[in-house]
Image 1 (tube, rainbow, N blue to C red):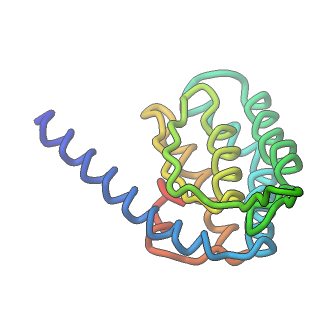
Image 2: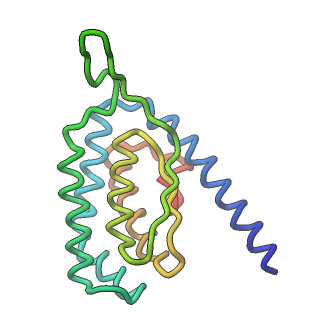
Length: 176
């Protein structure tokens, strides 16, 4: 029985990574303006839902205090976003006398999300991955799956509404 579950988990992970790889190829073609619009929309919904997601995280995991979880969510949605907002992640980002720096996405980010700060960790990892034009596959801690999936779902929907391509690779709550 355990062997069957292990095989199913490996198959599911392989499928998510394959689909995320396909999604990343499209992300890599997006303009700086479109990426910035998508990331802004994702941060906005995470900020707007920060208390509800914090409450979900507390209730599901039993860790911490809901208002503290909400504060961490707001930090990720506001402070992390404000830090990465001005960063150029598309094309030539800097030219020096003998050096030209060009932004280049790396591919698929594998993100392990803990039970201790599940929603805030998911928020900042999703924001930085998409800002870099990389796709992301979240691996939620088993005791925090629902709140992590809800965070990813909200951010995915906001991203799609702002121009993130609606790809089959991104339509799982575990992949963006």
